[in-house]
Image (spheres, rainbow, N blue to C red):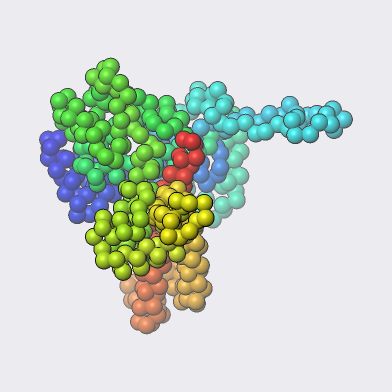
Amino acid sequence: MTAQEVRLCALLLQEHFGEVVEKVGTHLLRSGALNLHVMSDTGELVMEEILQRGQMTMSNTVRTVADRLTQNMEGKESTDYNDVVTAFSRLVETHFLQRCPPVDTATSKKTVSEVPESPASTITQPSQPENYPDCYKLPQIHLTGRGKRRRSDEDGDVGARVAKKAKLEHTEACGDEGIYWQVNVERFHLHFRHQAIISAVASKLDQTSSEIVRTMLRMSEVTTPANAAYTQAVSANEIFRAVPPSYNISRPILDQYLTLLVDDPMEFVGKAGDSGGGMYVVNLHRALANLARATLESVVQERFGSRSARIFRLLLRKRHLEQKQVEDFAMIPAKEAKDMLYTLLSENLVQLQEIPKTPDHAPSRTFYLYTVNQLPTARLLLQNCYKAVGNLIDRRLFETKENKRHLEKSQRIEAILGSLQASGAEPAQLAEVEEMITAPERQQLEALRHHINKLDSSENQVDETIFLLESYIKSTSCSR
């Protein structure tokens, strides 16, 4: 298929089935027919293992992930250690993994008499991973082979298997003993922030514009500090060479898109110079501010209606307005505008500022201006989000507790069915076990699962809002 055909298929998949299906479909179109285990990302298993254990050596991670991939393969196929090493190396190159800083044991060896009496100045603080010079330096490991399958006779003796595996890991030297790796959580936060910016550009402009912004972010993701207001400047020539060929963007078209992004009122992209065909940056702080602003407007619209949202957006844009000006600009009758303003004021979404003409603060000689302070409002909404997530968790726990008996019965029956299927039971036996759950109980379980899924989905959506608001507040405090 041509690049344009692939792009059209990707857009259709995204429109009808969502972003996840679009990514899977695009990967299949470009790579051809694949088994399911080939589409599973090795890097995902690497991150999962290290997240579960906190920290691991590179050699142990490679062995464990290769064994897991091999266990899920059909026939006699197995995963080469080198494939996992490649995925591990890419995660380190992109700073998603980092070395654990070495423990400073010099002070721990001192006796109590050697410790000076001066207090906090002598306390050794734990070093940050980024300050460690070899934070992203890969060790030279000596590891060859392929993943191994777990024998069926090992399934019943878990303790012996774990002890044997630990013994082998200690006896086989690979050259990276004592070098442990951990997940760089801050790097993931930056990645999630970039994904939010890319999605905003795609919804505001188009997919090509978002791909250009994605390319700019990838080019500077490792070199840009976490608290920077802008990314490192990149030239139009560098962007043109880094844009994926599947988008088939010519140089004149790229220049037009860059000009469009710079001139857009959202100010996601800025121009920093004219060398190299033009130097461009992604305005990270401005992008987060606009995303937080859109979130606040959406909350006001959902809670108080479209007219209140119109007043809220008007105050954000004009900064300070009297009540009569709000009525005129928003084109809302005086009584309704007054009620909406007071409602927003009582919810602390709108603030009232008094500017007296005379020192006596007489009401007849005082200007009363309505305004919206975005940062305090974002902090207020963030606290409401914390409360909402807590309520969702409480509700999920309550639902689970109320239906504990049905859930335990369902789990027991599923375990019995699993053991019968493994032993090759007849369909009549399986059907007899399934009938142990009555029709009303089955309906109640389905309703419970549907409710729990809705609560989980709502929790994830609120969590995205929390991340966005926290990123905006942190960015604002760092930029001042």
